[in-house]
Image (cartoon, rainbow over the protein chains, first blue to last red):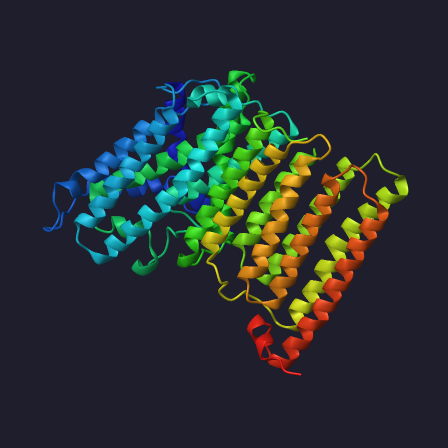
Length: 304
Length: 209
């Protein structure tokens, strides 16, 4: 219960920190850290407008997306704080909850009948499909490493103490960070600030959403970022630490993650659109190397 | 500790498959040289001190500094920036490198023999096969030299696999091979580049005496 509370508390500030870091490096006037709050509050005051070509799917999709992300947050532990729900192989449920939300957004985009939105939905589906093996292989390696198969048990028994497990931890953080960037349609594959429909991925999908629905989509993005930040922080937090230190380092890692995302967005050029699939499959390749490393650590493969 | 370097080496191979810029190839070769230095430093310390220092110098001076520096010179002379469309799309190359890696892991697990250090064999085998694949898919002479050097790094690791000592004669022979190979191919690339204003392999089929 506590972990859900902390995830939801950090979520709203995530985008604010990213915007602040980006503004700092672009030498612009810094926006308030609460700017995303104001934007969403303004959207909540507005009513939604629906195109006459859309059906009920378009109306329920943002809500389903929001709820699926919120439900996914229930499974995430922080250090030794248990998640709200936890059962065997809950990471599969977690992944498909997120996928379900995304599926609803994709069919809602198709529902509008706009060719631009169809194109965006196409791309989003491709990237989500390509990133899925990376996530599963990564979590499967961790499950093998710790001999546990729920998020809570997995991170509770994750002792990063030898040379090889350091590389496991570091590479896992690297892969998870880019999974987070791709899932949230951020810098190397997508640009949240682009203004050209032809190059958009996620933004073009939500062009028709307005008011209340758009606000829900924004909030879901915040929570998604916070979820992945929490997963990353679990690699750093050790469960022997006192509780206060665990929570302190959780907030620190979340802030650092938001800062790193801002930094990457400021300095890294966006990939060419045609180069995106190969770049994403690279993450799966690294995850497979991690899996082989785990096989060596757990002595499933013994090499002299 | 050697495992750490072996895994890093595997990751550099994936980046070789991913990257399309010649500058990145040179950087990756230098990084591979550093990784080989680490492998030698942590695993070969039972041999004669003179041989040990010689091999360390070989990895750090030749593989990390001289060869990349020379390749960079060749690259600048021929104004090479981006590898034009390879024969196989990068997407498939990444899958191929992963498949090679998995096959060689299974092979070394099967071969497990106390006479041989299979941990080096795994990555050496991957590196040699991938080097050959790298030469096949690129149209550019410069990239072919890079592929040759990847194979050479694989052979260096293979010589570690068959024994914990590395005979100085074998080592000298490999070193000579690299020097001659890189120097001659470098000059060759420069000549081809000057004559045809491009270093694609297809020009070589038009050569007449």
